[in-house]
Image 1: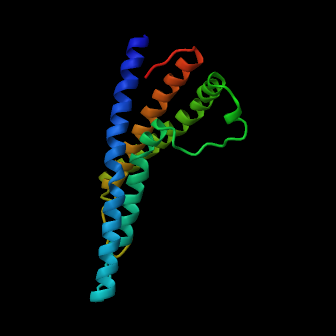
Image 2: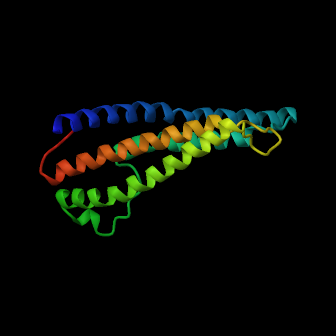
Image 3: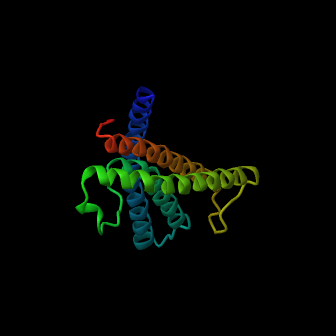
Length: 170
């Protein structure tokens, strides 16, 4: 059993790492688009209708695809009133309990994302704006990012469970 869990943790951590490292560069793409828009509007008096929405799509992809990586690095926001005073095993025990809430939340979010993505594909949903881009690409990316976060949350749960037992998984 532990061998299967160790393999799961190793592969999920690797996928989260790769996806997160790639997602980091989306910020530069977004900066480039915003800079292009600013230059276009300032020097050539050409406002671009697609820039704001594209920036929003890239930002959503950035934080959802980077979510699993952030969890892996333990770089997410944590309410730290008592937690920092506890020992590593008590922290791990608390994390195993709160992991159930996180996993439940991510499962519900994933089911909603799948449903919303299916709807966008079937009905060719577009955004109600002047640009009117199709919404299915960003919904696919968002659903994939949520799935990565769910897999990473399960991986972290297994790591915390091992820490509670005084072992180390990865």
